[in-house]
Image 1 (cartoon, rainbow, N blue to C red):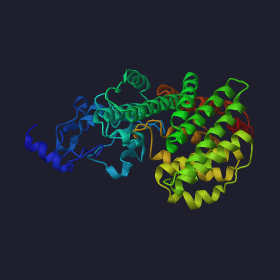
Image 2 (tube, rainbow, N blue to C red; image 1 turned 120 degrees about the horizontal axis):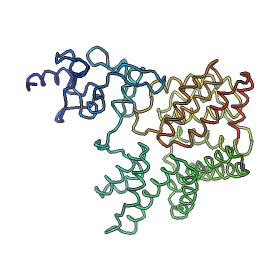
Image 3 (cartoon, one colour; image 1 turned 30 degrees about the horizontal axis):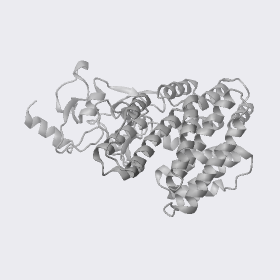
Image 4 (cartoon, rainbow, N blue to C red; image 1 turned 60 degrees about the vertical axis):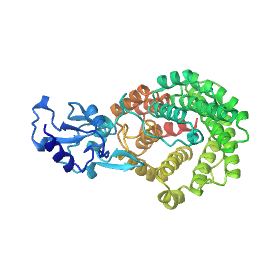
Length: 425
């Protein structure tokens, strides 16, 4: 293809990849066939699109992909015949799909490949080591591996990591905190039984090392709380005798984190305090059976719309839990609408953090069964298989519990009671 023809295509595309909208000024680009040549696609301008190398590589000769939300096979986005804004939106720097075509395209084209170099994630724990470019870059890449659930690769990298040479005692302290925090994130996200036990042991060793660092000490306590809740879930499924003890430990560690961070740290916003308060009351109620002093309707109608996107979804997740715990099905119906709307515009494969939508998706399945007459068991099984394939074992354990309820032939009221009872355990 001549340089002049390429320039015409690049100018028509606005100097951007026509799929992910990456700025191609000063960057290499590729001209790809919307309908592949292997499928009788022509070299006419109406069948050509400008693409970054990653989107072109991931698209290959495909013309369709599966929408992760509906499970339907959909045509891919066509830059020549479709409007980009109708199918995609940008949320926190990430392109996500608004429609089945957009979500299917996101899942196929925007996934990361082995040759993709991760961007700077601006991960807060790394800011103190930015003055060491090599160390910062290495940790940034490992954080990226965690967000993509590449646990085996990450743990190998962590075992081999040794940057001690030339570091001062304070710098070694920073180094060890980041390294151990990455290990905790692996244990927390993958959540095999062995991971949970190792995570609890590591977190308890870290607590005295960071006692005088309020934010870090609070973060470690929160992780311990989550690990104990995961352990409780496993023991409930195995009919063991410790779940109540582990739930109380989870509540205790979260309470310690909540009280310390909120009393000493002036930087926490009002919105973040609301989110932490909701979660603290939820964990305490689940462990002790005490009532929850939260006006759910007020939070949903007065507070949610004013929150930034990530905090909004965090609070929604906790509010769903409270509805299931208290049996407040009237408020739950409004939350079902909110969660469904969110998942329809942010499917799998379109976010850097592959695990981000999955906990909310699990809660969506519970709500769906409470408010819909039918349950799509095929799609439910696909979610379980997918979550196992990316090693989200804690979430798949929870969904398997509900799958057994969905599959039963009990009357609807009896199934609803079973769902609420499972959640309280």
